[in-house]
Amino acid sequence: MNDVEKKKILRVLSLMVLLNVTLVLYLSYFQIFQADKIKQSSYNKRLWANEDKVLRGSFYDRNKKVLVYSEKDEEEKINRIYKYDHLYSHIIGYSSREYGKAGLEKSYNSYLLDEGNFFDISGVKELLDKESIGNDIVLTIDHDMQLKTRELLLGKKGSIITMNPKTGEIYSMISMPDFNVNTLKDDWDKIIDDTNSPLLNRATQGLYPPGSTFKIITALSSLQNNIDNDDFTCTGSTTINGYTIRDYDSKSHGIVDMNEAFRVSCNTYFAEIAVKLGQSNILQTSEKFYFNKDFDFDLDIKKSSFPTNKMDKTELAASGIGQGKILATPLEMLMVASGIANDGNIVKPHLVSKVLTHDGILVKSNDIEILSNAGSHNDVEQIKNMMVEVVENGTGTQAKINGITVAGKTGTAENASGNNHAWFVGFAPAEDPKIAVVVLLEEEGSTGGSKAAPIAGELIKFGLNNIK
Image (cartoon, rainbow, N blue to C red; front, top):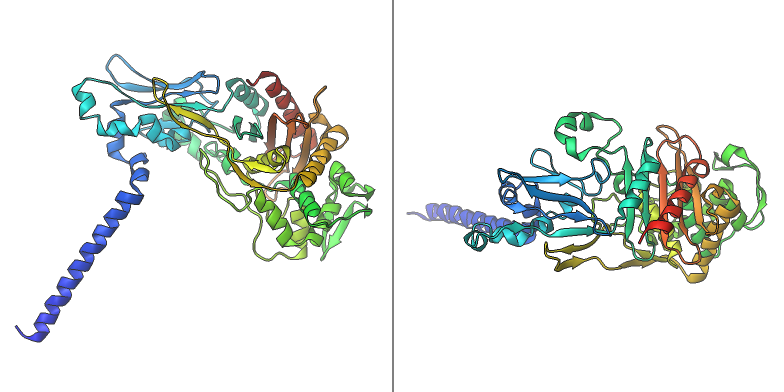
């Protein structure tokens, strides 16, 4: 064998060693880093085989009302029982061999099956003839509040969420249109062809211009950076770099300071002050509220966004009033309102209170987690007082509740592809907030003050009277 042949053989051997090492590393990556993901995947055939042998855990509301459970029929086949057709379609979702999993059925799949069972199904438990039962999940949702929320949104497109602004416990979350989890097989083709996207959870994945609700952030950034527009004269419109921004109905508000501009939701004031502030200041404040940031949530969420690419004055002016390239989910704007309610502390929202074994032993609990602080006590308190004035004497008077001080901000967001979106964000009681709310009415075609605010007021009142 000559040297040339030896070199060829050596190259082949080296290549084989390299390929084997690469294969080992590749398999190790999946074994170490992707094992949980693969194990929980609805496409994992072994998982479905195991599911046929495990009594999947139940879902309860915060008061231990049963929402979903599993039972065996006469032939020992396990059936998933959803007690409410539409009510939890975007929260709990569904678990289906044909259509996979969605909602908490997907994200908490391993808990519901009790992943420890997978090592016992064909082993010890089978020998002992012991039934495999998954863990139960207790939600932060109040069932009565969920019913009321859906009732108020029925027949509309959009989303409503209510939450404890101090703890992050979500009391209700509705996205419309929704779908019937008990008739997926019959309705599936119609659902996926529906241009209104009933499978989309608008609460967490719908991205919309926030409109004037974003003035909360613009105003706070103004206070933080000592930039004001006192004695600004509103003539009903202003032109910046050839772009004209108008107030609603081109109404002139006369001489206004920030408090007054916020109360009447003066677009020209906040457009001008946004230009004075500059992009970096507004960006910094918005990111304290978790724009442009991800956080762990019980469901899939879309990231809300404030532009990081250089903006011109026209884009800056539009951003000051929540238009242009700013996009936010209803969940994001609820976090904004809750941050003001909670002395600037942005608490992480959550839907799951705890996970329990079927006999009540605690497996996991979701405790209060502060994500960030958005501002000083004095600055946040001023914004809170301005939000109170909006409801008492401004654009949000239809959210008023007798005997309770409500703080809020309306929004009417222009929509390039259709009618305006109507927004309201707020909380109550203002002096000691117990509940925060966001109402988004998609393509409502009217103002947040006239359409979203009354829904918010009714829901806040119901929540304060009924949530335990």
